[in-house]
Every structure is written in C-alpha cells, then in structure tokens.
Image 1: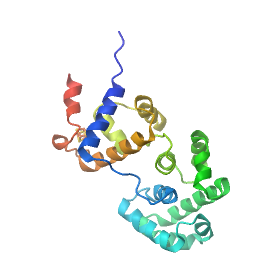
Image 2: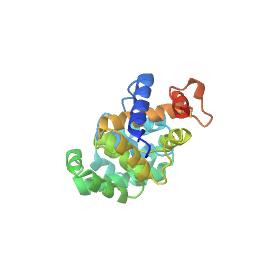
Image 3: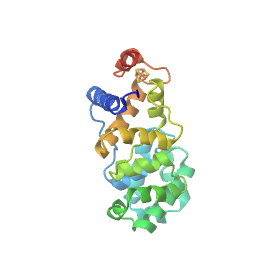
Image 4: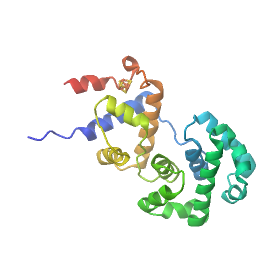
Length: 222
Ligand code: SF4
C-alpha cells in the first residue's frame, strides 16, 4: 500500500504555527513595486539595513525613476548604492534590469504585471545578474504572482527535518507549489516566516528547544 501524502497537511501546519508564533512579517518592505524590485536586486549578499541605506540614497538621487536611473553614469550609481556592498557589481546589475524594464515594459509596472508569469520569469532570468531567487522575489513580492521563492534558509529548515531533499531549485519550488494552496499571499508570508525562523532559531547551531517547530521531531517519530 502506498504511503499517504502528508506533505500538504504538514506544510500548512508549519505555516500556521509560524504565523501564530511570529505574526505577519509584512514583506516585502517597500513603498511601491519599483522599490521592491530594486530591493530584490540590492539585497544579494548583504543585510537589509544596508539595502535600506542604499535605497534611501537612490531615492534621494533619482526618486526611483527608471529613466533617471538609466541615465546615471555607472560610477555614480555605484557610489549612490555603496552601502549595499559589492556596489560596482550591483550597479551593473541594477542598470541591466532597468534597461530591460524600460525596453520591454516602457518602465511601467502595469505593463509588466500583464505579462504571463512564466514568460516574464524566462525574460527576467535572461537579464544579466538576475538569478532564480531574485527573479522569483520580483515576481512574488513586487508583482503578486503565485511563485514560491526558494532560498538556503528554506532548504536548511526542511532538510533538517528530513521533509524534503530537492536536487534543483525547481524541485524545491514544485514541492511548495504542489502542496500549498496557489495563493501569492500564502507564498509571500510563508517565505518571510521561514527567513525569520532561520534568523532566530534555525541558525547554524539550531536552538531547537525554543523553536516553534520543535513539535516536528515528535510528529516525525510517531
Ligand atoms: S531550530 Fe530545530 S526545531 Fe527549529 S526548525 Fe530548526 S531544526 Fe527544526
């Protein structure tokens, strides 16, 4: 007899427990879609406080107007976003993205939103410097598309509990999408909660005794 698939139940249970414990995370911080997209690019390999400083500088210099950002010399842009670290590289990535945004969607979020999510994802992944996690963060958090974001925190938590061992990014993504209601609001909150969990309890040296997910050990030993 085949084993019942417990993944949908346990995935949703984890979500509820985390939401109950931490409350809503209100992600992604940002006043508008462009700010969220810029934040998704600048957050690579740095902490959020540094990203906020970089975005503040960029707002002051450009009001986050894609046309103005596009016209900025690369060196000047790098100087503006310096607090975010790897600023020369990030300035190039941001420029590439802004060029794409202007060329494909005339710098209009409404036009971008209308694009089919699969096509848009493929296009985003062709932009130099935009990887899967960044593309999916843009799709989910800026454009409200039902795309689950996978990161190392998620993998750490779920492999520690032997709940899933995906080989590829897509396998991980499918695991969540298949077993949760297809709702961007849930995907949004779930990912944010997993990040919170990884930063508070599921650290490199995990604090399992205090963690809201410690019930999983009992559940798994049944
Ligand atoms: S801290 Fe421990 S109980 Fe909590 S998610 Fe990590 S491995 Fe699980």
